Length: 119
Image 1 (cartoon, one colour):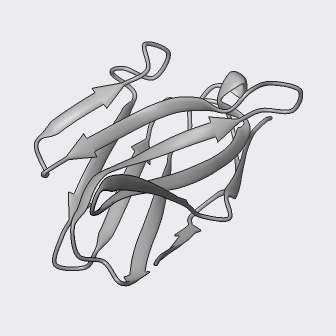
Image 2 (image 1 turned 60 degrees about the vertical axis):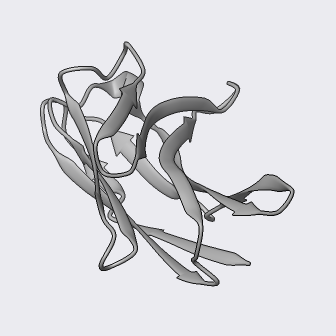
């Protein structure tokens, strides 16, 4: 089992920045991709960014050039640096980790952290 705890959310003005953190604990061997997803009120959860092996990253078109995902394997933590925030970035942000336990991958989710972009 993997436990994920997010932090770093809050209220920020448009154009501002926030850095989200997601710390993994528990049985953390064989974790593959980690990522960030978000869910705005009345909308489905959507992918924001993912990272595999510290190098391979993927971003939603809506955040490319503004958000950066990174990973510190020594700390079992994944980060999301969010710059040039827009009101449409307002959502609950969730961390996800994939773990291999034969014979398949399992998904684990954090509890979410609220981000509000408003003046």
